[in-house]
Length: 174
Image (tube, rainbow, N blue to C red; front, side, top):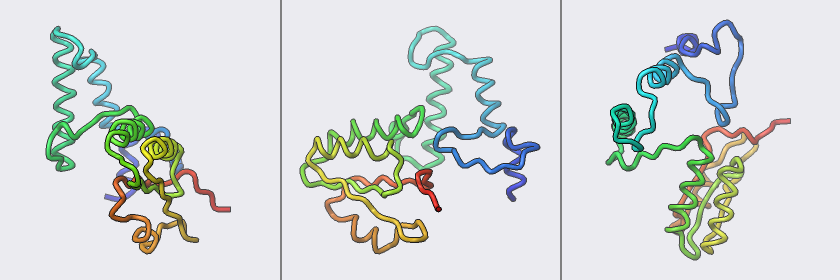
């Protein structure tokens, strides 16, 4: 599938010559997602897990079926491994302040890259300070990449969490 075929799925990209690079803040939605959201609002709009009335139970079923579909898609061992969050910031805070606080011990290590957005930096700064664990940074080379040598030198037997961005919006090439 070429790029033009993919662009056809995104209404906002029709008749516009643009490349959108701010998905960390807001992702553009393909037609399939827009239609699914519209169908939910038109037919099932109720709070999942909040009511004993039929519409709420239908919303719950859709919600849980979605969890199952995602678990199957990524080969998760159990649907309970799938957690929904409204955005990456909320998800990172959830991991840091639930898993991190509960599981990190003195002298454990958390490794992140120097390219991280504050949403993946500040929670780990606070959690490592509170748990007396250590926050280590992987640095980038002139090509804005983390080298194999850097990875091998920073991730050790004491490393319990590695949190690295796939694409960084905090880099700037002058």
